[in-house]
Length: 316
Image (cartoon, rainbow, N blue to C red):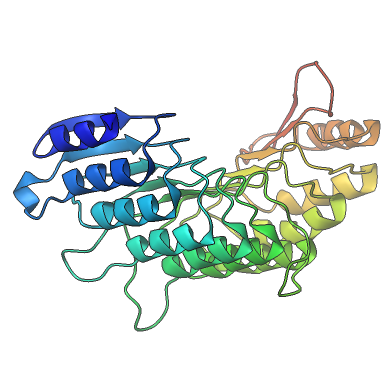
């Protein structure tokens, strides 16, 4: 009821941010807010920059109403609908919102936060396909930041995101934290997903931050990803915290040697991984070798899992 009143009051107003985190919005509240975003006349639409509806139980129909309103609003830049219990059916509505359909149905969102929604592999795939750049397909050029953390993407979902990143030259930040990268219906494994990301990265020039935090990635999985990182010269931050990268001395030394060829990567974060003493020895050895100027500005941030000490930093 309150959300319906708020939606009605928003028509024709200009505000910077509306945060309704935790409110019980549901379908009718979402419909009212969606109407305020596009009541039929552009000059009467709410001029809002950021809308946060996290943990509001939107549901499938609520997501449908909201997607229609957002797609027709020319002012909204940031939308957060994390933790709204949205399924793959709701993901289809969101995917439709992301594909331009003429001048009056073209989302201006630059940031979309979809974290903690159980889309599953199919839902994540639909969103990735909407953002893919293909011949004859309308392209979303506005969206630059996408958060799909905790969406049960699985290996199939991450594989689809990787294929999208191969040709999408608009996204600068992609977050895929805490997804379950197990073998899925299409038979993709975590190795397939990481290899697909590795193959996509050399073709992508826009992505600056890629986060794969908390995905139980092992050393072998990381080795599948590194070749693409080495060949990508736009990526600045790679977040691999809270995984299972228990690297040995030789593996760490090889990785650092390879990453030294990439002068754009400024932060590789392996904090809270079960790293051993051999890793720190490899870092110290690398620091000695690279003590002479000029630096190439690459940082490796590491903190052994369970450690309360300070992080070790490698500047190369």
